[in-house]
View 1 (tube, rainbow, N blue to C red):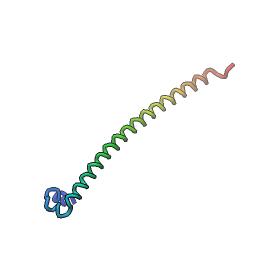
View 2: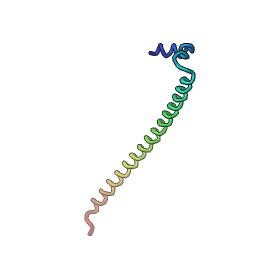
View 3: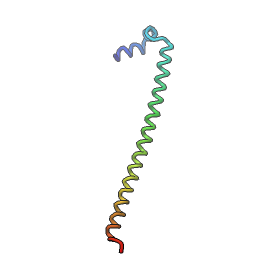
View 4: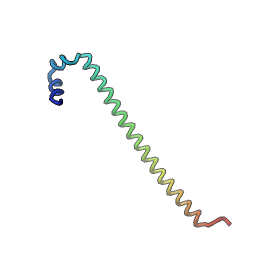
Length: 80
């Protein structure tokens, strides 16, 4: 399969016999659009991953804070 692709890539006559210029332009444009979409999704994924890490870090901090407050309340004993 790779040999076939390489042959078509290097041999313009063979490529033209299989695909019209219009089809090649359409596929090239679609490929560029898809590559742009992949880049955008990759960026969005990184952003969401960073937000998730920050949210988890905040949650861990809040858990430690709540645990600390529970210990302080328990150590004081019941109100007089």
